[in-house]
Length: 271
Image (cartoon, rainbow, N blue to C red):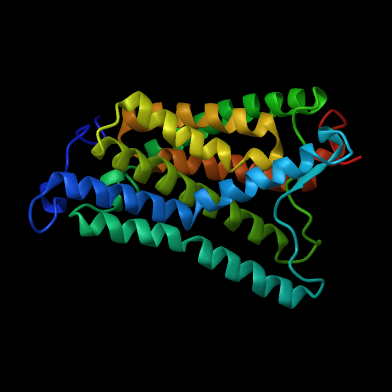
């Protein structure tokens, strides 16, 4: 199933004067703004972070890349910050939904809906199992070769809200990244006239870049994951299976760090 007519400019979005060239200029500006407000900003911070790690007087694999950290030592205040972070984390999806509506499309256009839940979950679970296991193997190898920092998925205190927050965080990552970096960006890149391969490469480079804070293994692993997700999206025409896959991968990563990793001596831990 085709995701979009490659290179086509939506007639409803050609602007008041029906000028395709002007519309493409607006699309480029729109993409830059969306990225600047979301994953492009994360990529910039990630680049600075990896430069800091590489210039530190310490091996890369002896440094930690922490995710899901507490914002306060006081539980009620930390919970408030966590909820605020999650809430505002979904706003970029709302922005993309608005931008799609303006051109006469919607989130359903990129397959973000509940039209086929059984198939979406089956496809997502299979992808999660394959990519998750391969990604774990790549991560362990990259740490051993000093190409990656030791990733610490969470340092949240053992509170009643920790696990629900981590699951919702995984959902936020799955929805946000797949709707924006996959569905939205591929649609815009195709409308701008990029070939499918160039669109897929650009989307995957964005995905890999904001994981660079973890190290080169994190960049490569997420770039490859991006290419696989792009192929799957173009084949199925739906972003929802990729949302399911991403959410499952992150949920297992976050909760597995707490309940499984302490019993698995072969998974790297901070030194």
